[in-house]
Image (cartoon, rainbow, N blue to C red; front, side, top):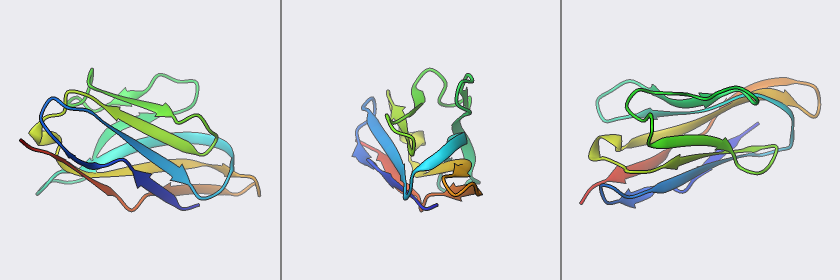
Length: 119
């Protein structure tokens, strides 16, 4: 299953962006979805993760500002980012794990999308 992120770009501090992540095929069951990021000079870190029906978990830096959701379909996830700060500048990666319609397990990462917060 391939994933493709969209919605990144340049935004001013205090602004908002909505990232979306679409899978290349329908999925029988999503077991976990998530967003991670790599800030310049730092290791990949958790932004948000969620198992359907459970309370999402967020990284400490984004609590209260970001929200993860299923994007209205069985193969998409979204990350709403509000009150963005310059230190949110990073490459954002989506993650999706589950079972395909062919009853095969998968765990996939997107290619990453740049988010730049700057005035």
